[in-house]
Length: 429
Image 1 (cartoon, rainbow, N blue to C red):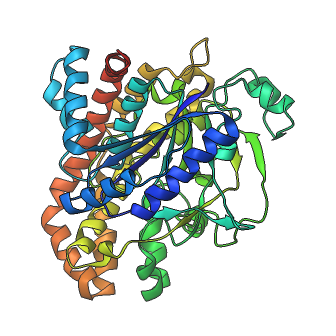
Image 2 (spheres, rainbow, N blue to C red):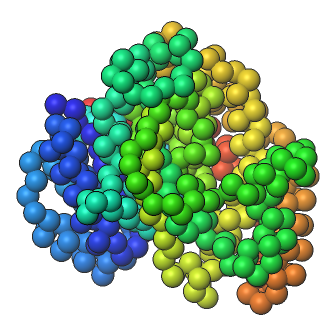
């Protein structure tokens, strides 16, 4: 029986999502014969965690579905045992990177990866608490339907099974390493208000995540498709393709990875940085590992907290840190793309040592481009006025700190990638 981890990291109230995720777990067990470990990593406040616990307690029994609801204390205890067993230097630094005090999209998923290794799972299937499933013909549209059949198996088997393919025949001996789709509904990054206030400023700001040397035309094309997912058209019927999946066509709220990927390389543990959990999508693509691209898109929505007086500046800071992180990630992505199959060993497994080398090499790039990004954001937000101008004032005070954080985040990531094999082995033990 295929043991899998269906994972929900959360720091907000999401009882309805937990119940819906349990339905997907039951579907996976019933329709695909999977042994499902439903993992809820709960970083919300005490009142919300208690409500989630009541929701979990009320879930109906489902065969071959085991629910794990772990608060941060339980997660920390597991991580401390794991880091100590790994016997690595600086265990406190590792614990901080795995469970930082601030929001980290990569770290919460890394904890899921380690717990999945401890549970003996063959894959991790991630969902988000600010999303829900589409409904078609009265039934929920569960992405796991496309994730389970071929993940981890040679791509040739998926092709032989009748799955539509545009995969290069030379890649069919490699394992299916990813399965995913995107989302419909609101933008994945909560900056729609900027577009409503001023379309030109929106294009200026969103275009800042492109490489600095791109032409205006390429930058404009990137802006048009950024954060839009699969648009707004609802699900009407299944389509799936065996391919090398374009990272722009999938989203981390609707993704599954084979263990051979996430047990080799973790996600960046950067704090307060939107998009810090997307690295493996690029790695799988650039290494030429096959994946399943399907159309069971998840419905995305935004929680109101991001627009409150305290939530707004915190969220905008995460967005700015995302823009700054791209100076380093574009450097790494270019080298991964050039390396291609050299990112894999003779058994088609990702070579973590090459990733460490590229990450370390990126930390020496000139920061001038990031200074330019901060200047552009400052100008744009002051033009918008109101609370955007107030945020620009905060940004001006934090400029040097943000520039330093963007670089140190990459240094931390390289350190974690080096430590990762020992952590995974310790978790499995």
